[in-house]
Image (cartoon, rainbow, N blue to C red; front, side):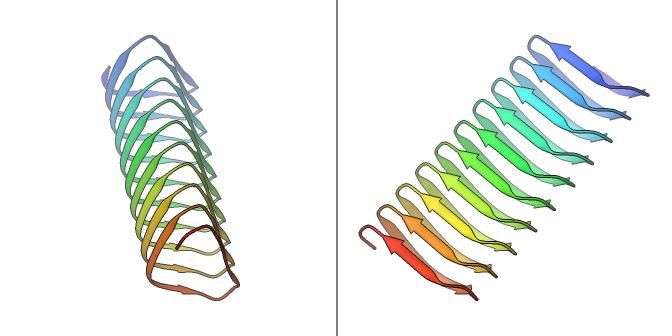
Length: 169
């Protein structure tokens, strides 16, 4: 699907490629997907492997499946279950990721909760940073506590809260 506007929710079942669209409601996708350059006024719910690039959503972003996300803004929480690569984004809610993760260049207004092996670089979070799994964290600022469980490499960071590390570091 390419270049369209819909006044309600957009529900897609099956593998899909969507580009350049606006939906006034939630975007619900079940199946592997590639989405590029879009705006949705509601939540974005994706079940399946996905590549998402250059988008804005006014609600939460919920992904179940392996994903690559780049250049986006979401007004709600970002919830991902699956292995993921995320780059260049802003979310006004918490960032919750379960799975192996690479995160780079982002801002989140809530807590950052990662469960799985991870590489995090160049980010700001206004809540606590909670990482469970082996991790490399570099060049970041958090205004809350930094809680890490697992083997960890930490470099070049600022936290205004407590630093709690369990595991080799």
